[in-house]
Image (cartoon, rainbow, N blue to C red; front, side, top):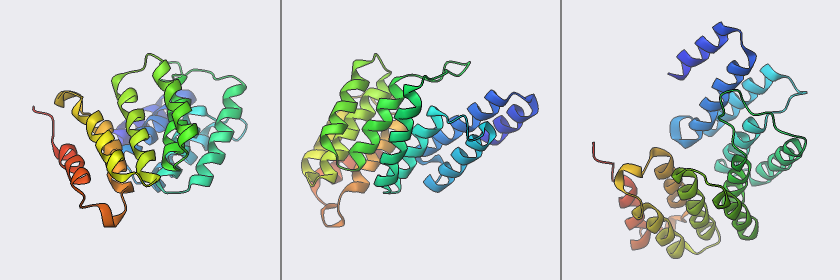
Length: 212
């Protein structure tokens, strides 16, 4: 699907559309569709289309998240700094309305949680929750909170928090994006604690698929 979308966008000759399709592929790719290194490659490709003088806030948010998944927390923080600097100069929304301001705070929540920076993660999460937002954003930033707890050594509490977030959703609303973020929490658990009942319960909850 993404290959077809890229071909169609390229055939249109519309630069903004070409970048938008690649940005969307990279953004969704973060949730297990692509390896993080591949996501970073897609980001570079899209940014090259725009040129160095037109940094994209959308691409920067994806870049920061991919770096976080790879454990490159210092790089992810630097990308956030660039992102905030670019955003402060004004964001031009894409013509299809995909861009939302809370995406910046969502990226902050993800990066700070992955690095175990609880104060900044809390602030970013509160900003996301302050927007109306869709249920996936709201669930995922609460899972970021659980991730941050696990990174800081509170494995049992973090696993239980994540399980509570998932369990509170009707099965039909446990989207792939939400379940993937739940797996980030599980993956952050140290090997010696992977068999803890709280972690096992979370893992089992994430295995459950919505009824079709």
